[in-house]
Length: 104
Image 1 (tube, rainbow, N blue to C red):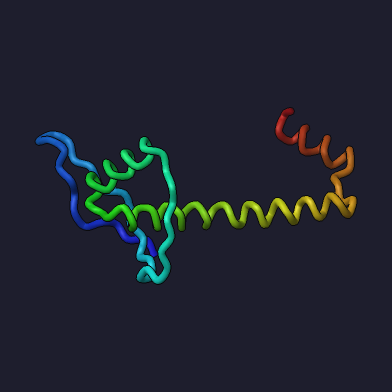
Image 2 (image 1 turned 45 degrees about the vertical axis):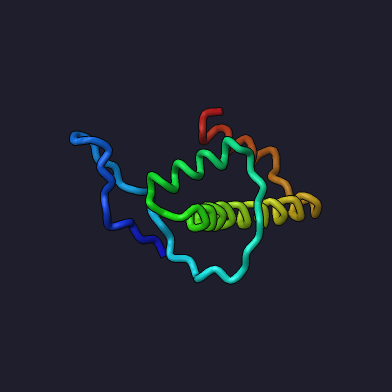
């Protein structure tokens, strides 16, 4: 469930920014370690301080977002490969119709 943080962080007297959305994730039940470059850790530290959130929460949200996008993408790719393996291809006429439709 998407929820927007209720506070606004003041950068200076003329500029305000909103922290990025946070997601209500279930309480952590599992823990694992991830090795990251010093540069990525520094960016995570900076973002956590700016957003006022823990690094664990930010990492969990980022991983959840990534997997929400990546898992269906790979599932659909596997379905497309299976269809191609079965010989299910567009005909030359279908391909040309798409090209014509989009001016390619």
